[in-house]
Every structure is written in C-alpha cells, then in structure tokens.
Image (cartoon, rainbow, N blue to C red; front, side):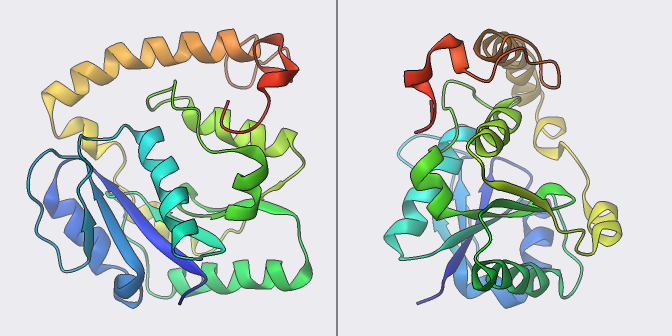
Length: 222
C-alpha cells in the first residue's frame, strides 16, 4: 500500500494525456485517470469512468475520497496537458514525506503552481474539499484561500520549476473543443460572480475572511 495516489482529470485531447502519462513512468502503478470525456478511453494506467462526466471540482473531491479509501496520506494530481521532467515526481514525493517527518502543518505543495501538486488528506478532513458550486475557474483560489485561512501551509517547492513550466502547454482542454470553450466562457462568468459574492471581492481583492458572512459555512467544502 502506498502513502499516496496520483490522479489526472481528463476531458479531451488523448495525445496530450499520453504525453503527460509517458512523462511519469515511475508513477504508473499508482495512477488513475478520471475520464470525463463521456467516451471510452484506452490507457495502460487505471481509468475511472464516472456515471456522468464530473466537473473540475467534483473530480478533485473524488480524488480525495478515493485516496482515503486506499489508505493514502496525500494526493498527487497532474494536469492532463503537463509533461514532467525526469525526477520531478520523486522529488515532490520525498519533499512531502520530509514535511511529515518534520511535523509541518502543510496543506498543499506546489511546483509550477498546481500543474503538479500534492494535497494533504489530513488537511482535507478539517478544511473540506473544493466548493462544487464553482465548476472550474476560481475554484482553486477559493480552495487555497480556505486552506490558508484555516492555518495550513501553502508551500511553493520550486521543484524543477523551469522544466515543468516549459512542458506545460496551458488550457489545452478548452482550446481543443469549441463546445467546451463556449461552455467555459459562460460558466467562468457565473463562477466569478459566485466567488465575489462569497468573499466580498474578486481573487486578490477579497474584503472578508468569512464566506457569505456566515461563520457556520467555513470549512467542510463550503
């Protein structure tokens, strides 16, 4: 049994997904692709086909639930349009294990932001997962804000940052499908409105630390 499991959320562009998976052969045995494409996906790593395609936030929350079922301590997740340089995966795993050994109160470890990152499941037990009322954009700012407000560390590891940045192609899921791009444009506006209503301002310009002005809503994915 491993102390971590790796997840890759997938919507489209199988060529990019293959490149992402091929870049981390050392993780294949502990990797699950969450297939939100709505069609069959052939892969030599484990594939989970949800009953209906999950949103980004629903996918993240499924990662946490599944990893806890496996008895893991932390989750690693990779953007499906990211290629990791050799050795980066093991560097992050060892970095995280050292944090546990030091007794650090860490919540999330970043490389180049979260294109490859680690999430502490003990933190999830306290703070909760992603707010599923936000479909995609702003969900990361909301989640990381709640992690920080709850007193857990957000750590920029700077592991192979230059190489990971060069390998990350950025927003390819949206760019690969006109329908996804159209839906994203509409949802992005709604997500931004929700975030501003929740925190009294846009990301970086929040005016409150209490979501919707209600202390009873803090944590547990709210």
